[in-house]
Length: 101
Image (cartoon, rainbow, N blue to C red; front, side, top):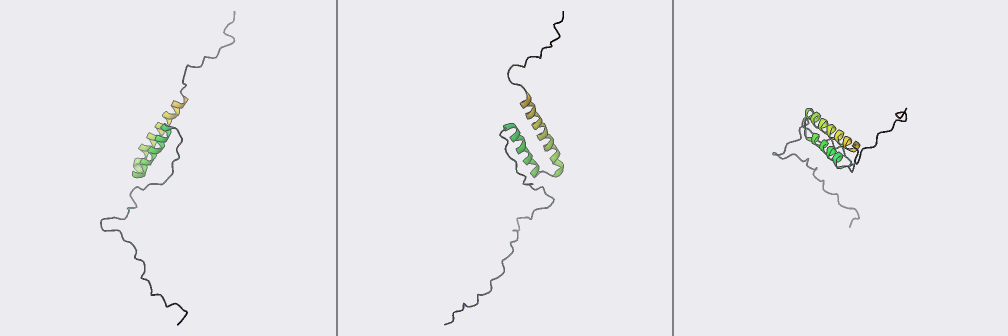
């Protein structure tokens, strides 16, 4: 008996998968997701606007501007709401020289 292993039979080359006839290769001109991660901020209004940015992943480039303008306006509104004071308005500063005789 021989201590050597018999030569292994050659394996056929792995077949390259081809898309099925009903599947089409992706069209390079079609919109594709950018895969940019969006981190939640904890503010529901801001997070909703950031999620709206995902809409551009499925639009052609000429459709992006509408989404970006919408998101920009939504973020401006959220910032304005944060700036709005809650509760009674602050008293007006007094003028020390208004009480001259």
